[in-house]
Image (tube, rainbow, N blue to C red):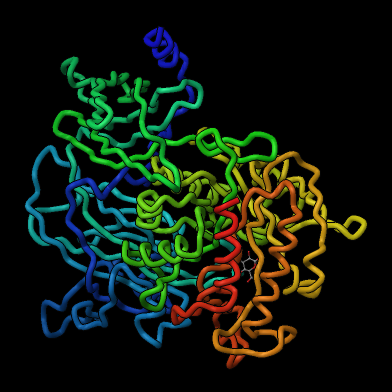
Length: 603
Ligand code: GCB
């Protein structure tokens, strides 16, 4: 009987594979052989893009990417990487040199690497993230470009790379434009640079490009998914199969591939389900000829039913906190496993089972650590505020970032929701834009919930009504509301009533107030810890009356850098809505939310 069902599943499964787009990085690059290129890189600041354009403003053929050296004393070369300042990779440039704190524009990065080139081997240069535009050159020639500051990409360099020393140059440009994702104005720092790891990946020509595995949504006791092999070998039957092994579940399954190298599987297994209380991960190996990929994967289900969110079939309340990708250990962008551990340990300590990773895809370590620690995750693309919803090119940029995020993270049990947007102004163009994104996300990953953070609520007889038409598109409605900070007095919030026009789960995806840690006074005095605490107390009372509420992620775990926050002596270019200061000190509101979550755990 079971075998019949499995066979039916296999035949019936015909939805799309995530097709390998040119720049989409290989699945799980950390499990591949690699030459890691992190460390000190030579850099040249280039505000006029002199290393790229000639004086006629045409793309130059003698730019800095040539990494040229004068060969004769009479030669004119007006730059020299080897004598130029160094910057750390990974790392934003803004916090590595005071002069670069506010810099937005182009910086050139250079470093050499040495290899002994082998035949039948693919070489790809992989970037965890570069903000915002990257133009990559190898040995003086352009390889390719990438746009988008928070997702990985890779370029095949097999033909260009040579045995011996290779010169890698990257032009990084973070100047803001209206037609970008995100657009010109945000409430976070536009950190520039090669902000995540760089490596040269080495793998066989015929290799496992991608895979997706999860608990079947329709069949109990079944794991299902797909694999995609690039350059599938055609010579013998064995070369048309991938072997999946999950030793702890006694799974050894051969997966047949079609002529495009694609194969689906469904296999009987009864894993211990992943949950915040028991974040069980299984070792998973995939073998294809000489290629082996190793991963750690958790299995759980996530669904909505009316106003409930069901994790493994049981209704759950998401005790969350929002987090920006800023390091708790040093100034600037977070990127390391240590950063992730400190941030997520704080979230655990607060009593959270959920984190909203705002407002863009965070580095992969955050998701891997969330998987290990048992934190449910909301993951988001930076369709933030007023992007150009009428512009098809802008849509394509957003869709590419969505694809790159899902491609990288689709095997992480921690992620339960993909968020399409944050606080976008209502219009028909915006509804179409975000509906198309949601449809794309569902095609790429039918196993997770779709959400968006909305800030348009209308007033109805003294109550707040959730009536943004985008609510009809999403599975879970996120509501951002700053009662007591941007509107009303804190005391009035406790009795504020909410109504929803949709029978769907709602998450209060943001609320909060600024406080300078250590500034004390009356609770009516802005910027004091007492004011912030009062906002929390009253908002939590309000939340208790929202019958359809299934979670929250107050704004925000830690103070973060923002160019919109200049108030001297208070903000000094920090958004002060953190429960923890930029120095890592807890404010009064931390304890209020902590106590609230402790009670919620017992309820
Ligand atoms: C919001 C935004 C968030 C801001 C926050 C604030 O509604 O979603 O990005 O940082 O408010 O502090 O105003």
